[in-house]
Every structure is written in C-alpha cells, then in structure tokens.
Length: 232
Image (cartoon, rainbow, N blue to C red; front, top):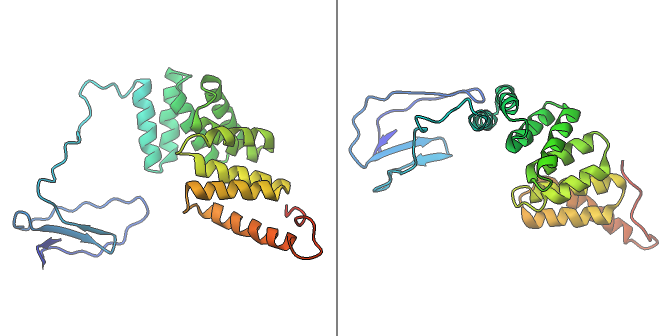
C-alpha cells in the first residue's frame, strides 16, 4: 500500500485456492493519494468522485428462506465454487418450488460437475418441460446427453442453447465435437468455425478447428477423394 509513491505497508502472501485474507492497516494516508498494488494484476488508485451508488446491503425484509432466496444462496455458492453448499441450497429451493426454472438448470450444472450425468439430464429435462427454449437447461441437457450416449438429444440441446449469446460459442463447439466423433468432419469444422466467430478466444474451438483443418488438407492431397476415417 502506498501514500502516493511512499510505501506505508507491504506483505508477502502465499494463499491456497479460495482462501481469503484480511488485514487492518493503521497507517496515515494523505487524502487522494491512496494506492494499492498486488503483484502485476492489481494497481488501484482512486479517482476523483469514485464513490459508487451500488447498494451494499440486502433489503431488511427480503426472505432468504423463500424459493428466490434459496436459489440466490445457491447461485452465490456456485460463484464461490462451493458446489456442495450450492447443491444443498438449490435442492431446498426446489422443495419449496419444484418448478423453479433457474434452480433446475443450476442444479443440473452442479450434478453434471459431480459426474451424475443421469441426474443432470433429468433436471435439465424438467427445465425444458417448463421452458423448451431455456438456454441453460438446453446446454446442460446437451452435455449430459453426450455422456449418456444420446447424440441426437445432445445436438438438439446445443442447437437451442446456441440461440443465446451467453451459451453460443460453448454450445457450437460441443456440437462440433459430436459431429467429429461421428466422423462428419466437414460439419464439425463448420460448427467449430462458427464458435470461433462468436468467441475468438475459445481454446477448444481453436484446437478442434486446427485438427480438422489439417485433416481437410490431407483429404485434398493428390489421390485422395475423401476425408480420412473417423478418429474415434
């Protein structure tokens, strides 16, 4: 921590993933000269009139035991990567309201991460029964379908999920993988390139596009009339 360019506090930290650190610093700092730096990734210098208007407290009468409150609790645990607590809160939400769509899709994601693919598929399918176009339910329905060997269901889910900007790049590359496993390389390459147009930083799309482009180049060599056989 700096007062302008003068160091008033420093400490070397070695933290485990998700470990928090709190430090009370009793050091005089000239108004407007506070500066906080952490490694090469944070260099905070307050600007003039930088006080935010964002509320910092929940409404006093908000019911955290309601379906909405329990879903938000589960969502916050997901953000903190504590999936066990997230599952507990989301399941409590669904006990209050079995048709709470956001909780169904979030719990499907949590169960998918726990490799409970049938459980994730069932939850996502319940969400689709409520809103067949829900992007999150379709995406996790697609992922679970891949694991369960339901290729047609997987493509169905990814196609609908791709209608949402939030899921488009991920859904398109997952569809590309399905086509690649089938040996339909031209279609797989088309989907991989569409995924990259949506998100140029999608590493899976880059890798699959590169592999398929190499195979396409091999197919175009003299004496070849088709793509190489499937690489399953």
